[in-house]
Amino acid sequence: MAHPNTHRPVPLELIEQLPKTDLHVHLDGSLRLTTILELAEKQKIDLPARDPEGLRAAMRLGENCGSLVEYLKAFDITLRVMQTEDSLRRIAFELAEDAARENVRYMEVRYAPMLHTRRGLRLTTVVESVLEGLRLAQEKHKIESNVIICGIRNVSAETSLEMAELCVAYKGRGVVGFDLAGAEYDHPAKHHKAAFQLVRDNNINVTIHAGEAYGPESIAQAIHVCGAHRIGHGCRLRENGDLLHYVNDHRIPLECCPSSNVQTGAIREMSSHPLKLYKNLGLRVTVNTDNRLVTDTTVSRELWLCHTQMGLGLADIKQLILSGFKSAFLPFHVKQQYLRKVSEELAAYPDDDDDNVSHAANRYAPAVA
Image 1: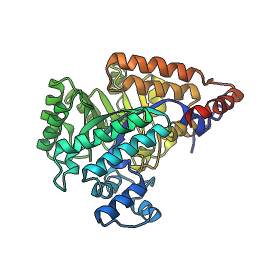
Image 2 (image 1 turned 30 degrees about the horizontal axis):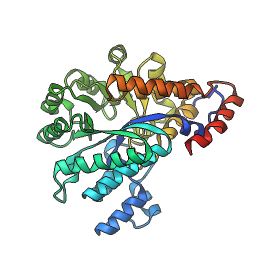
Image 3 (image 1 turned 90 degrees about the horizontal axis):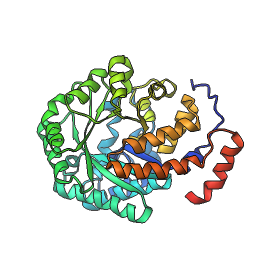
C-alpha cells in the first residue's frame, strides 16, 4: 500500500527537469533493448528472443524476481553483447545520453572489466573503451561521468585484486572508485581484503554493495574491515540501531535503489522501503537507478516513486538530489561548485503551493528540451 501523501502532487515531468546525479548504476544492466538486439545480430549472437517484447519477457525486466541471484540472471544476456571495443564504447555513450535526457548532470558508472574479456579483449582496452564512450557523451551532452571498477564477491579474491590494480592504474584518468558487487549471501567482503587494502593505500574511494541480500553485519564488515566510504543499498541497516547511528554520525552515504530492492526481494514493497526513515533520521541518502534496463527505470522515476509511494514532498526530493552531489566521488572544490549551481537551480522550483509547482513545470519545460 502506498504511503498517504500529504504533499501536493509533483508531476514526473517536473522531476525530470531537476538537475540530478546517478551514483549507483551498472553499465551491464543499463543497455537499450534495441541496442542488445542490433549488437547480437551484428555479432551473430544467440538471444532468447529476436524482438524487444520477447527479450523484455525473457529478461524479466522490471519484474519482481524474488532474489538477487534470480535478478542477476538478466546479466547473462547483456554480457553476451559486451565483448568488443565498439559495443562497450556505444553502450557507455548511450547510457550517458539516456541519463542526460532526464538532466542527470553527474554520473558514476560501475562495472567489472574482467566480465568483458571473453573474446580476448585486454582489461586496459575494456576500461579505455568505456571511458571513451563516456567522454564522447560529455562532449555532446554536457554530462560528466566517471567510472567505478568492481570486483565480484562470488569470483575469486585474486580477480578482485586484479580489478583493484586496474583501479590504481586509472586513478585520475576517469576511474574514481572501487566496488564489490555480485551475490552477497555466503560471499563476505572480508575475503577480498587485499583488493581493498591496495586501493586504500592509493587513496582511492571505496563503495561496497552491502545490506541488500544479507544483514547489517555485511554493512559493518564493509565499513570496518574494508574501509567503505559509501554503502550500496544498505536496506538492512535499520536492523541495527547502533550501526545506523555510526553511519549517520560519520556521514557515510547510502546509495539507495528503491525499485531494484523490491525486484530482488530485499524490500517487500516500495512503501516499506527504509529510505524515508533513514532520511528523517538525518542519514545521507542518495537515490539511484542501479540498472536502467533490468529495473526498467530512470533517476527521475525513482525520485517520483519516493514522492508517490513513500510520501516525500518536493523539498525532500531536492534534499535527496543535493545529497547525491555531496556524496559524489569528486574533489571537494568541484563538489562545492556543483552544489552552489544546483542549489540555485533547485531554488527556482517552489516547495509548496500547487499553482507554483505546475507553473514551475511549465516555465522550465523549454530549458530541458
